[in-house]
Amino acid sequence: MSLTDLEASYREILATTGEPLERDGLRDTPLRAAKAFEFLTRGYRQTLDEVVNGALFDSDMDEMVVVRDVELYSLCEHHVLPFIGKAHVAYLPQGKVLGLSKIARIVDMFARRLQIQEGLTRQIAEAVQEVTGATGVGVVVEARHLCMMMRGVEKQNSSMTTSVMLGQFRSNPDTRAEFLRLIRG
Image (cartoon, rainbow, N blue to C red; front, side, top):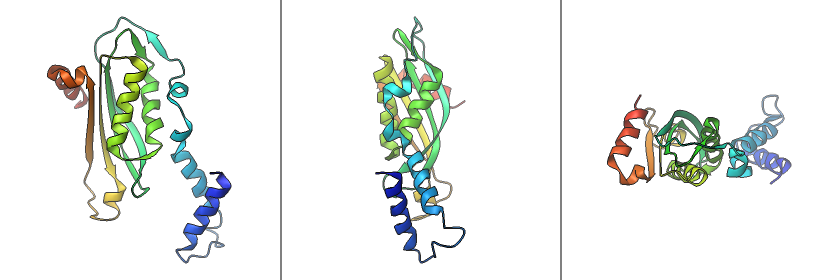
């Protein structure tokens, strides 16, 4: 869909409120909203190869690598409302380590798609596994969902935690426990 089509769609949606779209505050809103939506869903226009951009390096490191508190902003696929939180990502390298910023970029790529938190957590874990060939990957995502806070049950202090454990993080309780201990800070 083009930016022009998206703008027209926002114009139509906003018109249903009954507000005059010609008034100062709304005159340019359809275009601004279209640009914002395009930005918030840019993950659809990215690939894992582009995001990693060759930043995979040979290493004899085989101890756990943990990146904590990677902030994320996403839109839930059910209500197209934001969920905001952080991801904790760990992996056990097997001959390769990933450039540090690439973990954050992987999180962003998948967060910038319409989805549910459970799917986001799995996508991050599987992507890190695919790129690194690690012997294990663990991902925990903690987020607050505006679809639950602003509408419906309106529970302001609720949050959701999801996890995906692959390889050694799934099969070895000590590895899982070490990861969970490290992300508690």
